[in-house]
Length: 305
Length: 271
Image: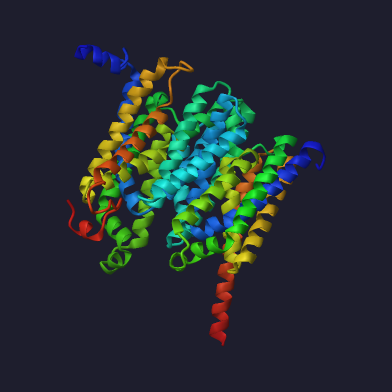
């Protein structure tokens, strides 16, 4: 089989000519990088639940936006940021208490989502809406949202990069951070805001429920493989982009696959690729005596790379 | 309001509230809020698969919630707990998304699985719900002491030979069992609100475990019963009232605890 054949076998005809595919590849990459970078800090700080909750909560925003007839993206963003502020307000600093506070905010927001979706279906009878809100659809991004998507991605990314040192230090050793004059509480709040923005973004792409995968998966894998925060962040970004792109290719290919003959969801492929990457990362460390940490330690933060 | 189908609703919702109150107490105490969210939510995928293959939804829910519990416990052995939970959850949901994309007229049913269809409980569904509820309660009663010990004082429990890992697995399995019966009634997303809100409120009211558990059950019952009445009158989804009710009781409990603390401080200052 020639290279050309193989190429055509992997990329169905029309893959590179399709407009929605171009947008999906570009936006997908931006979001994968943002989620992966923010994800490294999320995993290190043990805030996966908050990340997932913010994604779920932005579904409420999505359904509110659907009800009001505005672009879903604004709904995602408004509810995500609001919930982040509320969690910070009632959040207790201890990890268990924080998880309970997160859970209560999440529960209330899901109740609201149920109401909005119900009211939405009453007025316009589109039951499919709850579906695109939850599971997303990368091939139907409207080009008018792209600039807003990229701008907010850059904003979240910039926030996290500027705060990187302070964030790592305050999550690994709050006492040392406080002694060095790091405003631990403010830094935590700023991070939660960046997390909300980045999660609202990936919620648009692979759906609110599955955006957790892009946030947590690549970061957890990278933290097992790479040493030091900088290398881990770069590795995470590469894994994220690779999973999204491969997922898009596979979803495009799956168009004629059984049983339904109308394509398998992108989010399914992306999540499966991320999971496969994570499980493969176990293999690499098996023989080493030092167990994988999935985190960083204070020493590495003070002297990165 | 108390005839025919509505009677099923009342029985099923009461059973759900009791089991949610009891398991929620341990979920809050152990800090496994995320698992309490992940198991019902991921089990939804099982119901989607069951409907695709033509099986009973209970079977799908049971298989997926048990698989979720095993997945979380298995991955946690070598990874951080929240990462393990997150990855298990997204995997199950991704499979669910695939199942949903394969079936054609699933959207409405998916909505009711996510948000509950409490007014559609049929008579054949009441019995399995009550039986599964009784089994989960019995399981919790049997392992009450070791579970309590390993939740409150993990180190002491280990020293006495109670394996934290085994306790975690056992608890997750009970949660999975409770989930498979409650999801068709209150929905995957709201089973979680019912577990966490009342239990967290009860914990801020009292420090005594049995009292906190009883209070949690009572608050869950009040939430669900009020929800059913209001939902019946207004036609709005029950999930909305359960979600808001849980948050309301949590905030009320926190306010009460804060007020009492201030009183104690003032009393100490006067003395």
